[in-house]
Length: 83
Image 1 (cartoon, rainbow, N blue to C red):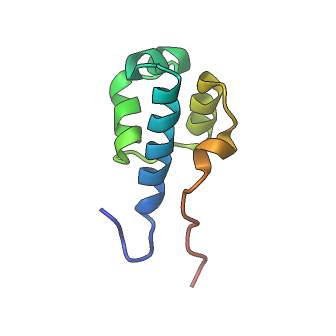
Image 2: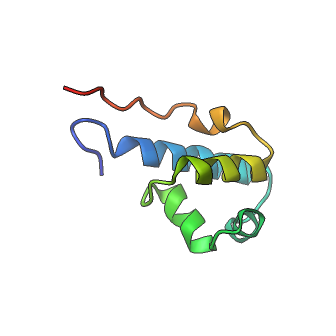
Image 3: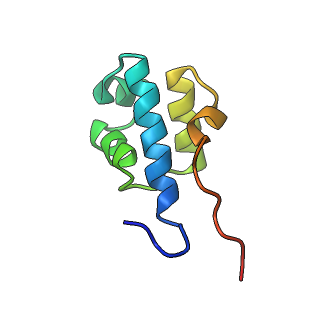
């Protein structure tokens, strides 16, 4: 679900990028979870956009996938500035 200000779009876009990177590497959610010390259900929630991961979690995921965090953030919409 997306809000008028686009705030809900960012977790979904990050999750899509994460899923794509994981699948390109042939890694399961469970394997990625083990590499990051997370529970596989949390990886699934992030991929579905149902969770908004912290910066440190995003960095751990990128590191586990052997990619730059910037690659996972590609296509994530900018947050609207203060009104």
